[in-house]
Amino acid sequence: MMTDRPTDIKINADLLRPVMKSGAAWYATVIVSGALLLAGVFAFSYQVRHGIGVWGLNRPVMWAFDITNFVFWIGISHAGTLISAILRVTGAEWRRPVTRCAEAITVFALMIGALIPIIHIGRPWLFYWIAPYPNERGLWPNFRSPLVWDFFAITTYLLSSIIYLYLPLIPDLALLRDKSQGLRKKVYSLLSLGWRGAQLQWRRLERAVQVMAIIIIPVAVSVHTIVSWDFAMAIQPMWHSTMFGPYFVAGAIFSGIAALIIAMAVIRRVFRLEDYLRPVHFNNLGLLLLVMSLIWFYFTFAEHLTVWYGNEPAEKMVFQSKISGDYAPLFWTMIVCCFLIPAPLLAFKRTRSVKGTMTASAMVIVGMWIERFLIIVPTLAQPRMTFNWSSYRPTWVEITLTLGMIGYFVFLYAIFTKLFPIIAVWEYKEGLAHRDAKPADELAVAEN
Amino acid sequence: MEEKIIAIFDTADEAIAVVRRLRREGVAENAITLMSSEPIHDYESGDERPSRIGGFAIAGGIAGAAAAIALTVLASKQMNLVTGGMPVVAPWPFGIIVFEMAALGSILSTLGRMIYEARLGRRLSDYDEIIFDGRVALSVQCADEESRRVVKRLLSPPDQAK
Image (cartoon, rainbow over all chains, first blue to last red; front, top):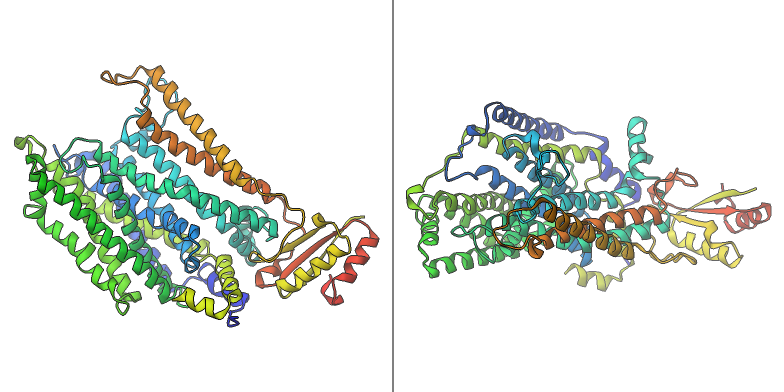
């Protein structure tokens, strides 16, 4: 039996420290991300004032940075709820300090992803026209449109992810209620719904989280599949592919894990949570990232091989522009960032360290953003009618909006860590209790 | 007169041992509440009803799917959409919306049922915040003076009862 368990008082103090006290690193994060967010807000207000023509979009490339960012952020959102749900359903004990970091990523990434179509419509104040409700204009969404499927899928996933984040948060909100004073106490009292830790409440909470984990896995898979269908339903070169659904889902999980590793590494450093987010977590997530890197490469190869072998002229033109044409530098950067460097780095235990996984993850994030861009722009820039070919250059507005979204995400995440424990306190304690209850030999097998 | 007695224990095992003694003495199961900062899996409540969260999740899913079918089919028929000769009611794309709304219905009903079954959303009473420092609180509801004496006796050592 293990007996080296830290006391609950120490665990509470360590894990509530980020909420109770703010260090210089946290303030620096908020200031830098807040500045990026403000820059993004400025670019957005400029775009609203002057119209969407301030973007670099021009016929035939009418989707570019905006939809790249949309697909990218929806992909990042797969970090949390999906990974957390899979780890919960499979009973992976090491998940405990990881799940909330991941679930929060999902909610904030989805919020940003859902915002982008609203920005893109040009007149964002009319965004509610997409919602199906009786109106005097006689407008009604076409349920056959993949963009309407997006609306339903993202709304479902966002609401589900918020609930899935909130449910396991309730006991920790009760802890915060008991440890805080004044206005904070009132807010936490309200949010904790009168939680008192009765065994009936624990059992119901665990049951509900278990049921939700099972429901949310297919929802998460459906969301990125539907995002892929935004493209695959169009008969465009290199879009009209049956494997786009799984290809997008694999890419989403890939970039999601990378985002999670980066978030964990930053949290670990900023809040000094080295005892909780340990190398074993980075090792395990690094292994998952390696697997996803291999799967992603397999999909990418299969997708491009069939296009090359089919030799259909319109498809071949797009293919050629990626492999050796205008987009080749981006294409090969993507291959380097998503596979050639991360895979060897993650394959060896020695380099699958905190720094190693963090480096690989940063590369994957860059590579996956480029991948989204390369799926969208080359196809649009080279339609079947060659006289209509064009190219695309982003303007400062699109670049600033993109940076603003990154700032917004980091800002929201930083605020979240200030309001709620970023590591689930009760789940961590429960994990220690499970560990203590296990015989030493069984524990050794589990850790190996 | 009804009274609640709360005893604090250092470990879950001690609390469970006392709960067993209380049960043996005939204290009603619904009068006993064991509170802790993490779930105690060794504790088995005697009269707890099985959870219906799973059933409600399924029912919520069916309700969500039905709402989606109504929305897509009725709305499409009403608005006379030009579909180029394709059927107005299209099962494949509508199925996607049905799936999403079924999942949403399922998740919302899971949340609602969980809040109801866990008796959340009520005023906080009969509780000691010391549980979050790793202690276990046992609350026993005593219907009369006699049961209060029995409970106090069982919650030994005596200084643990407050």
